[in-house]
Length: 263
Image 1: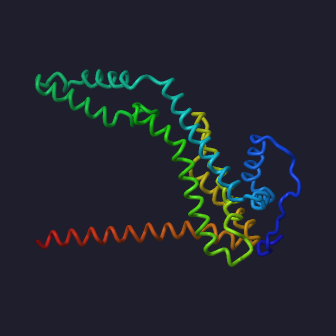
Image 2 (image 1 turned 135 degrees about the horizontal axis):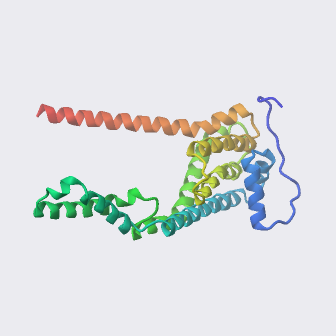
Protein backbone atom coordinates (compact mmCIF):
# COMPACT_ATOMS: atom_id res chain seq x y z
CA UNK A 1 0.00 0.00 0.00
CA UNK A 2 1.53 3.31 -1.06
CA UNK A 3 1.81 6.34 1.18
CA UNK A 4 -0.83 8.18 -0.80
CA UNK A 5 -3.39 5.42 -0.47
CA UNK A 6 -6.10 5.88 2.08
CA UNK A 7 -5.77 3.84 5.24
CA UNK A 8 -8.96 1.97 6.03
CA UNK A 9 -8.68 -0.42 8.93
CA UNK A 10 -11.65 -2.00 10.61
CA UNK A 11 -11.66 -2.81 14.27
CA UNK A 12 -11.97 -6.47 15.27
CA UNK A 13 -15.56 -7.60 15.00
CA UNK A 14 -15.25 -9.85 18.04
CA UNK A 15 -13.27 -9.61 21.21
CA UNK A 16 -12.77 -12.29 23.80
CA UNK A 17 -13.55 -11.51 27.39
CA UNK A 18 -10.26 -10.41 28.98
CA UNK A 19 -9.19 -9.30 32.38
CA UNK A 20 -8.54 -5.55 32.67
CA UNK A 21 -4.78 -5.99 33.12
CA UNK A 22 -4.44 -8.29 30.13
CA UNK A 23 -6.61 -5.98 28.05
CA UNK A 24 -4.44 -2.98 28.98
CA UNK A 25 -1.25 -4.88 28.14
CA UNK A 26 -2.63 -5.93 24.76
CA UNK A 27 -3.64 -2.36 23.95
CA UNK A 28 -0.27 -1.04 25.10
CA UNK A 29 1.75 -3.54 23.08
CA UNK A 30 -0.39 -2.98 19.99
CA UNK A 31 0.00 0.79 20.29
CA UNK A 32 3.74 0.61 20.95
CA UNK A 33 4.35 -1.60 17.93
CA UNK A 34 2.18 0.64 15.73
CA UNK A 35 -0.51 -1.93 14.94
CA UNK A 36 -3.21 -0.07 13.07
CA UNK A 37 -5.87 -2.59 14.10
CA UNK A 38 -5.28 -1.68 17.75
CA UNK A 39 -5.80 2.02 17.06
CA UNK A 40 -8.87 1.21 14.95
CA UNK A 41 -10.28 -0.99 17.70
CA UNK A 42 -10.04 1.88 20.17
CA UNK A 43 -11.51 4.35 17.66
CA UNK A 44 -14.58 2.19 17.13
CA UNK A 45 -15.44 1.75 20.82
CA UNK A 46 -19.01 2.75 21.70
CA UNK A 47 -17.69 5.13 24.35
CA UNK A 48 -14.49 6.11 22.56
CA UNK A 49 -13.87 9.20 24.69
CA UNK A 50 -14.36 7.36 27.98
CA UNK A 51 -12.15 4.50 26.86
CA UNK A 52 -9.35 6.87 25.84
CA UNK A 53 -9.71 8.89 29.03
CA UNK A 54 -9.44 5.78 31.20
CA UNK A 55 -6.38 4.55 29.30
CA UNK A 56 -4.45 7.81 29.52
CA UNK A 57 -5.39 8.35 33.18
CA UNK A 58 -4.20 4.84 34.03
CA UNK A 59 -0.83 5.46 32.36
CA UNK A 60 -0.42 8.72 34.26
CA UNK A 61 -1.25 7.16 37.63
CA UNK A 62 1.07 4.18 37.12
CA UNK A 63 3.98 6.42 36.04
CA UNK A 64 3.41 8.72 39.04
CA UNK A 65 3.35 5.73 41.41
CA UNK A 66 6.56 4.45 39.81
CA UNK A 67 8.23 7.80 40.48
CA UNK A 68 7.10 7.69 44.12
CA UNK A 69 8.36 4.12 44.58
CA UNK A 70 11.65 4.94 42.84
CA UNK A 71 12.23 7.96 45.08
CA UNK A 72 11.34 5.92 48.15
CA UNK A 73 13.82 3.20 47.22
CA UNK A 74 16.58 5.74 46.65
CA UNK A 75 15.77 7.37 49.97
CA UNK A 76 15.80 4.05 51.82
CA UNK A 77 19.12 2.90 50.33
CA UNK A 78 21.01 6.20 50.53
CA UNK A 79 22.68 7.95 53.46
CA UNK A 80 20.69 10.58 55.30
CA UNK A 81 21.00 14.19 54.25
CA UNK A 82 22.37 15.09 57.70
CA UNK A 83 25.16 12.54 57.30
CA UNK A 84 26.08 13.97 53.91
CA UNK A 85 25.98 17.50 55.32
CA UNK A 86 28.28 16.58 58.22
CA UNK A 87 30.74 14.90 55.85
CA UNK A 88 30.89 17.98 53.64
CA UNK A 89 31.33 20.24 56.68
CA UNK A 90 34.17 18.08 58.05
CA UNK A 91 36.03 18.30 54.74
CA UNK A 92 35.56 22.07 54.63
CA UNK A 93 36.83 22.39 58.19
CA UNK A 94 39.94 20.40 57.22
CA UNK A 95 40.92 23.00 54.63
CA UNK A 96 43.73 25.46 55.48
CA UNK A 97 41.54 28.56 55.23
CA UNK A 98 39.31 27.33 58.07
CA UNK A 99 42.09 27.66 60.68
CA UNK A 100 42.69 31.30 59.76
CA UNK A 101 39.10 32.38 60.45
CA UNK A 102 38.33 34.46 63.52
CA UNK A 103 35.65 33.27 65.97
CA UNK A 104 33.10 35.69 64.51
CA UNK A 105 34.01 34.60 60.98
CA UNK A 106 33.68 30.94 62.01
CA UNK A 107 30.22 31.58 63.40
CA UNK A 108 29.22 33.42 60.24
CA UNK A 109 30.68 30.64 58.06
CA UNK A 110 28.79 27.89 59.87
CA UNK A 111 25.55 29.88 59.79
CA UNK A 112 25.96 30.56 56.08
CA UNK A 113 26.77 26.90 55.41
CA UNK A 114 23.64 25.79 57.27
CA UNK A 115 21.43 28.22 55.35
CA UNK A 116 22.97 27.25 52.02
CA UNK A 117 22.56 23.56 52.74
CA UNK A 118 18.90 23.98 53.67
CA UNK A 119 18.28 25.71 50.34
CA UNK A 120 20.45 23.67 47.98
CA UNK A 121 21.37 20.45 49.76
CA UNK A 122 18.57 18.46 48.16
CA UNK A 123 20.07 19.12 44.72
CA UNK A 124 23.12 17.02 45.61
CA UNK A 125 21.12 13.86 46.25
CA UNK A 126 18.69 12.00 44.04
CA UNK A 127 15.75 11.65 46.37
CA UNK A 128 13.26 13.85 48.28
CA UNK A 129 14.74 15.22 51.48
CA UNK A 130 11.85 16.95 53.22
CA UNK A 131 8.10 16.86 53.68
CA UNK A 132 7.48 19.28 50.81
CA UNK A 133 9.36 17.01 48.40
CA UNK A 134 7.31 13.99 49.43
CA UNK A 135 4.06 15.94 49.17
CA UNK A 136 5.02 17.03 45.65
CA UNK A 137 5.68 13.43 44.69
CA UNK A 138 2.40 12.25 46.19
CA UNK A 139 0.48 14.98 44.37
CA UNK A 140 1.97 13.58 41.17
CA UNK A 141 -0.67 10.84 41.34
CA UNK A 142 -3.13 13.63 40.48
CA UNK A 143 -1.01 16.13 38.56
CA UNK A 144 0.69 13.67 36.17
CA UNK A 145 -2.52 12.12 34.76
CA UNK A 146 -4.24 15.51 34.82
CA UNK A 147 -1.41 17.03 32.80
CA UNK A 148 -1.55 14.17 30.31
CA UNK A 149 -5.32 14.54 29.94
CA UNK A 150 -5.16 18.32 29.41
CA UNK A 151 -2.38 17.94 26.84
CA UNK A 152 -4.32 15.14 25.14
CA UNK A 153 -7.46 17.28 24.81
CA UNK A 154 -5.64 20.38 23.55
CA UNK A 155 -3.49 18.41 21.12
CA UNK A 156 -6.52 16.55 19.80
CA UNK A 157 -8.59 19.73 19.44
CA UNK A 158 -5.88 21.41 17.35
CA UNK A 159 -5.52 18.37 15.11
CA UNK A 160 -9.29 18.07 14.65
CA UNK A 161 -9.41 21.75 13.74
CA UNK A 162 -7.49 21.13 10.52
CA UNK A 163 -8.10 17.42 9.91
CA UNK A 164 -11.88 17.15 10.14
CA UNK A 165 -12.12 18.20 6.49
CA UNK A 166 -10.25 15.05 5.48
CA UNK A 167 -13.08 12.87 6.77
CA UNK A 168 -16.11 14.81 8.10
CA UNK A 169 -17.61 11.57 9.46
CA UNK A 170 -14.84 11.27 12.07
CA UNK A 171 -15.97 12.73 15.38
CA UNK A 172 -13.71 14.36 17.95
CA UNK A 173 -14.03 11.38 20.30
CA UNK A 174 -13.05 9.01 17.49
CA UNK A 175 -9.80 10.95 17.23
CA UNK A 176 -9.20 11.19 20.97
CA UNK A 177 -9.45 7.43 21.55
CA UNK A 178 -6.54 6.44 19.27
CA UNK A 179 -4.62 9.54 20.37
CA UNK A 180 -4.83 8.22 23.93
CA UNK A 181 -3.08 5.06 22.76
CA UNK A 182 -0.37 7.26 21.27
CA UNK A 183 0.68 8.23 24.81
CA UNK A 184 1.81 4.63 25.35
CA UNK A 185 5.57 5.40 25.07
CA UNK A 186 5.20 7.64 28.14
CA UNK A 187 4.63 4.45 30.11
CA UNK A 188 8.34 3.67 29.62
CA UNK A 189 9.01 6.18 32.39
CA UNK A 190 8.24 3.38 34.86
CA UNK A 191 11.77 2.19 34.09
CA UNK A 192 12.96 4.82 36.58
CA UNK A 193 12.40 2.03 39.11
CA UNK A 194 15.59 0.44 37.79
CA UNK A 195 18.64 2.73 38.15
CA UNK A 196 20.65 0.90 35.47
CA UNK A 197 17.81 1.03 32.94
CA UNK A 198 16.28 4.04 31.28
CA UNK A 199 14.93 5.51 28.08
CA UNK A 200 15.87 9.01 26.96
CA UNK A 201 13.23 11.68 26.73
CA UNK A 202 14.05 12.23 23.05
CA UNK A 203 13.37 8.56 22.30
CA UNK A 204 10.02 8.71 24.09
CA UNK A 205 9.09 11.96 22.29
CA UNK A 206 9.93 10.57 18.83
CA UNK A 207 8.14 7.31 19.55
CA UNK A 208 5.10 9.23 20.75
CA UNK A 209 5.08 11.36 17.60
CA UNK A 210 5.13 8.27 15.39
CA UNK A 211 2.26 6.82 17.41
CA UNK A 212 0.38 10.10 16.95
CA UNK A 213 0.83 9.85 13.19
CA UNK A 214 -0.65 6.35 13.21
CA UNK A 215 -3.53 7.53 15.42
CA UNK A 216 -4.38 10.44 13.11
CA UNK A 217 -4.11 8.28 10.01
CA UNK A 218 -6.43 5.64 11.44
CA UNK A 219 -8.90 8.13 12.96
CA UNK A 220 -9.47 10.00 9.71
CA UNK A 221 -8.70 7.06 7.39
CA UNK A 222 -6.33 9.31 5.51
CA UNK A 223 -2.84 9.15 4.02
CA UNK A 224 0.40 9.01 5.97
CA UNK A 225 1.50 12.36 4.54
CA UNK A 226 -1.63 14.10 5.78
CA UNK A 227 -1.34 12.36 9.13
CA UNK A 228 2.22 13.64 9.55
CA UNK A 229 1.09 17.20 8.86
CA UNK A 230 -1.83 16.79 11.24
CA UNK A 231 0.40 15.51 14.05
CA UNK A 232 2.95 18.27 13.41
CA UNK A 233 0.48 21.15 13.36
CA UNK A 234 0.04 21.55 17.16
CA UNK A 235 3.81 21.26 17.67
CA UNK A 236 4.59 23.90 15.05
CA UNK A 237 1.88 26.15 16.47
CA UNK A 238 3.34 25.80 19.97
CA UNK A 239 6.84 26.68 18.72
CA UNK A 240 5.50 29.74 16.89
CA UNK A 241 3.62 30.88 20.00
CA UNK A 242 6.75 30.50 22.13
CA UNK A 243 8.78 32.49 19.61
CA UNK A 244 6.09 35.16 19.42
CA UNK A 245 5.87 35.64 23.18
CA UNK A 246 9.67 35.52 23.48
CA UNK A 247 10.01 38.31 20.93
CA UNK A 248 7.30 40.30 22.72
CA UNK A 249 9.02 39.90 26.10
CA UNK A 250 12.41 40.84 24.67
CA UNK A 251 10.89 43.82 22.88
CA UNK A 252 9.08 45.07 25.97
CA UNK A 253 12.22 44.58 28.08
CA UNK A 254 14.29 46.53 25.55
CA UNK A 255 11.77 49.38 25.55
CA UNK A 256 11.77 49.48 29.35
CA UNK A 257 15.59 49.58 29.44
CA UNK A 258 15.69 52.36 26.86
CA UNK A 259 13.14 54.39 28.80
CA UNK A 260 15.17 54.04 31.99
CA UNK A 261 18.38 55.07 30.23
CA UNK A 262 16.68 58.19 28.83
CA UNK A 263 15.72 59.42 32.31
